[in-house]
Length: 256
Ligand code: BT5
Image (cartoon, rainbow, N blue to C red):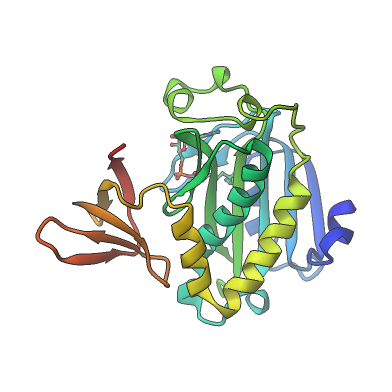
């Protein structure tokens, strides 16, 4: 309720004790008239969290897992811009986590990871939903007080949890109202001016100035990362001098 009244932006909230995936649940509700958007689904426990490309998201009781569903009127008119919401949501999470762990730096790894002290602290999964694909679901998983020693080895090595960097205990759901407020503000800015988002993203871009290797459509592209452009694409200068813009892909390696 505090969430509904704080910004006045959310129109419905669903709190679930346990769910397989908050994104899956949100998508299943997309065409129901009694579920006004922006809608928030928060899970106390998520058992089969999803990442991108069929990957999975590990969570325990210290992991904040939620999905926000928005409908076309709350989004930019041009649907080709909707994937940029991963950057917009990432920036909002970065804003809030940055305040909690200050002075430790929080950065964004294009396109959808939030990094803390060299490891991933949050991931964002954007999906479209509804019969006419006129809804967007923004799923966020954030390691607030996640006990990473219980995570699969592959996650353990590369993940970070806020609790290991904050100088005071942080309760799993304590940061949620602030994150929702920041997302609302960032989306409002983005609707009118996506270049401003690119500018803010570049300031906290983990990859800018580094050598990167990106898997894109089955090919590996290598070069120096220049940041992102106004459309949210990653700009990379190849060794032959040509600057290419990568709209989707996976950054598989980057230099220190
Ligand atoms: C993501 O995918 O990072 C998007 C994760 C989105 C999760 C949220 S939770 C609420 C909502 N409901 C869902 O079902 N999903 C969303 P991707 O870029 O594909 O990264 C996945 C990879 O991150 C995995 O293969 C692991 O290597 C790593 N990973 C998994 N769990 C992690 C964790 N708790 N912390 C850090 N890294 C993790």
